[in-house]
Amino acid sequence: MPRVHANGIEIETETRGDLAAGRPLVLVRGLGTQMIQWPEPFLDALVEAGQAVVLFDNRDVGLSTWFDEAGTPDLGEIYKAAAAGTRPPIAYTLDDMADDIAGLLDAHGIETAHVCGMSMGGMLTTVFGARHPTRVRSLVPIMASTGNPALPPATPAAMEALMTPSPTERAAYIAHHVRTSKVIGSPGYPVPDEVRAETAGRVFDRAFHPAGVARQFAAIAASGDRRTALAAITAPTLVIHGLDDPLVTVDGGRDIAATIPGAELLEVPGMGHDLPPGLVERLSTAISTHTAKAEEQR
Image (cartoon, rainbow, N blue to C red; front, side, top):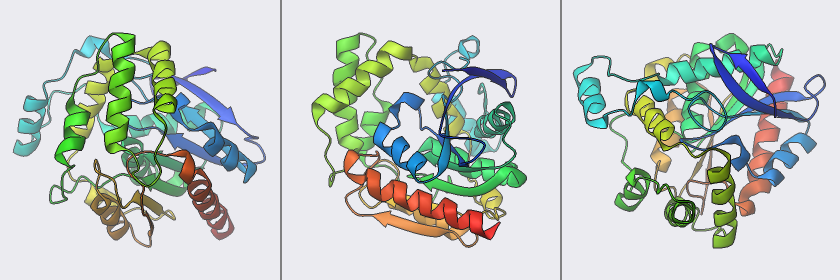
């Protein structure tokens, strides 16, 4: 997998399909996750539908640049500063991470692209659309939100799963990942424990970096309400959200759709906060149909 220099950092990236001939589609992962966690059948379906897919590790996770010199953030201080309207002491913002996407496009020689992200990646998708409107063909935020403080919070079980520190020993980490992913996963589309464990093992072996996850979480916590910026987005937008998401409730997706002018909303029964095998065909088809339609409208 190649590494490129973009936005002042090193970003690990990979492409699938023909960038010269296909519709370029950048996929943006969520909090603390790596590009190897995109399901292979999902990627295959997107490429088969005519998209050239660009994958990458967000800053501070995987094999992209880590920011360990910034230390571990104090979330209490961050929430306090955000409530007071002052800039909290964080290593980087969601704006910085969205600018990484622009740098990634430059590194690949791509002028404009479709951008699709899940969870924090969905947030970054919309921030990118607001900050770089001339680089966007269409947007697909999945299981994301606007940062509106009035939105319902995660369920207690989902929040506990999110906030529980990851063990540093491999077997314990895998067991923790299996438990956590089951709590926030899709009740209508269960994933076998052995599949979850295999994914966790690959993630741990490739790049275990909990400090980076904490700094990404700090960037989310400090980002505040993004509705004003999102309201200026003009790119065709498809919002996808599970009706059974316990971590970022469906209200988050509905708020994005209500904020971005002309946005479409696809609500999926039985879907939680993951991309289970049982939904690969439906979600890849929805994304491919949306990007093809956006191409026709250009």
